[in-house]
Amino acid sequence: LHSCIWQISEIDWCEDNYKHSEHVAEFFNTISSFFFFIISPIMLYLLHPYAKERNLAIHIVWVMMIFVGLFSAYFHMTLSFVGQMLDELSILWVLAVGYAVWFPRKFFPSFIKDRWTFARLVLVLTVITSVSSFVKPTANAYALNCFGLHLLYTLIKALRLAKLSVALWVLAISCWISDRFGCSFWQRLNFCYLHSIWHILIVIAVAYGTTLIAYLDANYEIPYSLPGLQFWPCDKWAVGLPHISVKITLHLLTFACCIS
Image 1 (tube, rainbow, N blue to C red):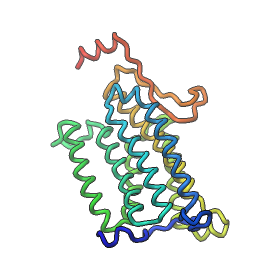
Image 2: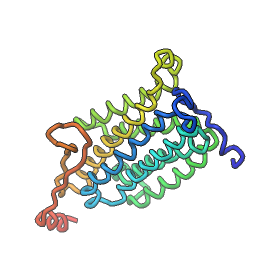
Image 3: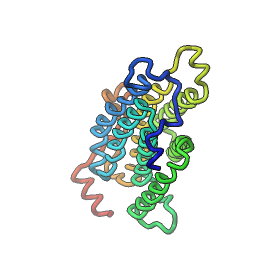
Image 4: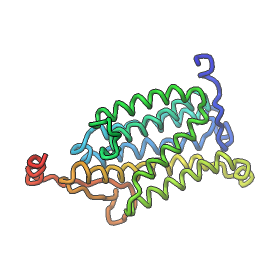
């Protein structure tokens, strides 16, 4: 493992290497990764009222998304094997944290009685997957997209936000697949930036998806907070970054304490 970790990655995206800079392998794929640094702090701020009432551990998801952007930029800048693994494993751990904090309790296996036990099980499985991913790194990339699709399956509801989340995710994955398998076609059109577009679409899709999951979770776990959906920067636009509004009053807190 030590001898191969600094090798060039098996994955090379469609964008021409070192075309715009002698120090950056895939220039636009690297630059587009910085959208993670823009969206993540905004989502941390927007979801803080919900996280404060529910569980501050929820913030770990978007903190780790910053690392996804960092490792993605490093990977596309160097195309190194270690960059590829850091990129893919950071995504895996974001998904693992999402499962641990948001997976509905009513769907827990019968032998799991509380969320902490479930979180430890997810941790063990994620560590095993992280180690095994070094055996076949390319297969790991496809597995991550399958996990993402499973998350979408669990949150399909008759909500506008759900439809937008699915649409963004499908569009993002379409760009990922097209860049991966249709590179020669896009090179003939001199348009090799689909993976860059994937970066932008996927971070927005995650913003929609996590907010939707958080909304469903809040209705199930803290219904007394009267959770609602809003959009930033202007709720009247019905576009932008979604977030949850919570309404906590002394009367509601008293009621919650009585029924708990």
